[in-house]
Amino acid sequence: MSFLRLLREIVDSLFSLQLVYLLEVIFAMKKRTAFVGAILSLIPLGQPLLMKTGFAFSTLGVTLFVSENANAESAKSLNKKGMQEYDKGDHYAAISYYSKAINKEPNEPAYWNNRGLSKNLIGDLNGARNDFQRAVIIDKNYDEAFGNLCAVNIDLEDYYGAMSACNKAIKLSLKERHFTNRGNAKRLLKDYEGAIRDLDKAIEINSKDYFSFLIRSMTKELMGDIKGACLDAKKSKSLGNKSDANNNWIKENCKRRY
Image (cartoon, rainbow, N blue to C red; front, side, top):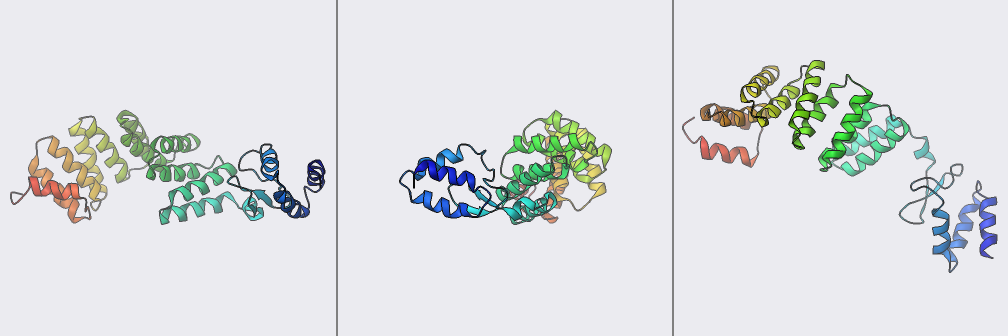
């Protein structure tokens, strides 16, 4: 069977299951690599070769798979699968599902926010920030996304950007994490008194959050209040903070004095 004749028969049978047989023949030919490469070069990466038959090429090789169910899957279902992968700690898989959900429903802010969370956990901080920014552009009342934007800006050392995002989050919702993050940003900007006010508010809202006590401890240390810093560090530990850094700091600075 000649090369051109094979190509003609593929075109004639694009929406037929005969394609499977034809591909098997093609793969047996000596020029199969060049042929498959020529076909794949005409197709955008990741796009199905045949939508009606449900068959598609994997971009990693020439393996065929059935994609009919994937094409029909809703964005909501894909987002749910992403959340399941997130809970399992497989953030690369989670990002893949969130991206598919976004492709189907790009104006759903929750999908952008969720993908941003996974990107943050794999160390893609700029990617996370971009996703959180997209989420709040779509929904200007999305306080969780503003809170996440504040947190990732702190990690990126954009403390004024963090302040701006936290201010918007607090206007929308008086959650302790928003006050804690803003207090942390103020600490890093050396506004220690402002940081203490925010951290006091966070602890007033939720007295069981060890992170608020930890940040307040660090702030008090910078203010020279070692006794107060020790009390907060120990409180943070009693609430579940098991970090070596906190434990070592307590041993070195508190001892039996406080």
